[in-house]
Length: 165
Image (tube, rainbow, N blue to C red; front, side, top):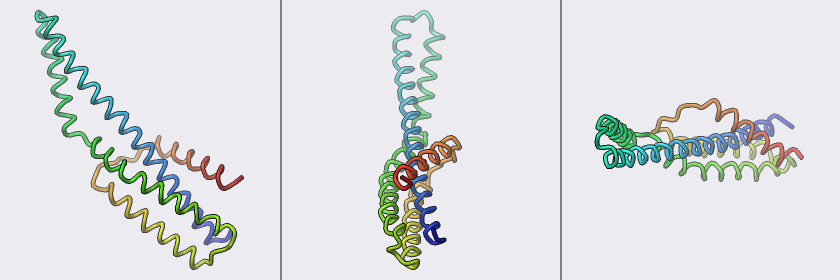
């Protein structure tokens, strides 16, 4: 594999990795958002239930209501719904970009494209990826080492299965 082909393949790997990384991030954000929603609902209902059945235990009732109110306020200012919205929007774009890169790999691997054409494709991939990632820059998305490991593993398995048979 010549240098130009190797650079294209690395770019294709990066894009497939990024697709899996953001997919894992979205799944995790949805999981925790649902957990917070359920927790708020349970505490709110628990507060009503405690008031109905245990009017004598005013301290317990007050604690449950306070926790329910705190969860309600935290939900309002939570970053998860915005993160879920943006990641849901960019993930299909990343999947399309990965598919675009992989569609062209066959021509590159068979030597049907010139180095100039490959360079042009690499620039297109860079430009499209940058455009997609700029959409999530307004929100806080801390790097997750666990997702990095899993995304690398999934990308390697995917590429090995599809391109190294």
